[in-house]
Length: 433
Image (cartoon, rainbow, N blue to C red; front, side, top):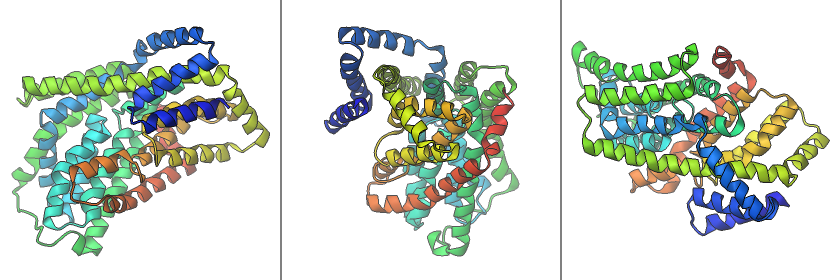
């Protein structure tokens, strides 16, 4: 009954067009009044809000966002993509290959799926369409590599999942490296194979410009390799145990700031825009975290969590059946609601179930992140599909759906590998234990 009431309230608020953060907060105000004792429940919600936003474990969220915004608004991301294009100019379907490699590199520096897709969609995707590339190669790689930002550190969603679930944030961040780069390799292989076996998808008039050795490699060494030093500093600090996620995020933000100065790209306008966008995104995420704390308490005090556990125990599923059921629920939810909302609704239920079944929470958390990433691309309301439609307004939404399909299948393949061989994702996190 509790879940039904809260779900109906939430659906009603969504239908009015309210922002996600405000809709969840409104749902929890009503839920706190109904299930936590009227005014006492509202007092508890206020205490939860204060405790949630003051948590030190959430500091990496605005720092990771700031790191990506600085690189984006100061133009360093564009310079890096130009350097990658020179390096890969001899590959078939080279602009699509540049999109995969450049998008993956930016994912490892920004942590923002939306920013990544918007950048690639407004530049390389439009250029490929003008040159006669197929819709799949023009749009698919930009959306797919944008989603990789959910996995490859710095990932704000990984930090948020760790904060909500109690799973080690360090282990979630580091554990996303292998599946993230596996997906990138799969995307690149697919693009190359399409370019080789279906030349009409990547027109032959798209001939590679002849560069000297210096022209090919110097821009890459100058504009890409130093930026990867930021990624190495963030991950190396956590993997070695020298830095906590918060300290690593601070190091990454400072390194990005220093990089914009060294490349002489930092301006007052770019700095102001970066700070404003960081504040907008961070506040929205923190609003939802505030709501999620109270939501968990409502489920606990009303008996919803206990009832769900009792129901599952009565069915007595195997751990694998339980995991597959959780992932299927997330896949279905990803077709209709955003990723933060998915975590907020499911984490309070899934984590107790996983603990009762003896499931490795780090492994489960990484599987959830992959499915959450899939939700960015699954029709009808995948957010990256909408971002791409905004970037290339002349392409019908149905064609955008079709362009994403091969890359969705590749992500599902990687998800299957993670389920069959948990060591793919748990090996690196185990080094930090």
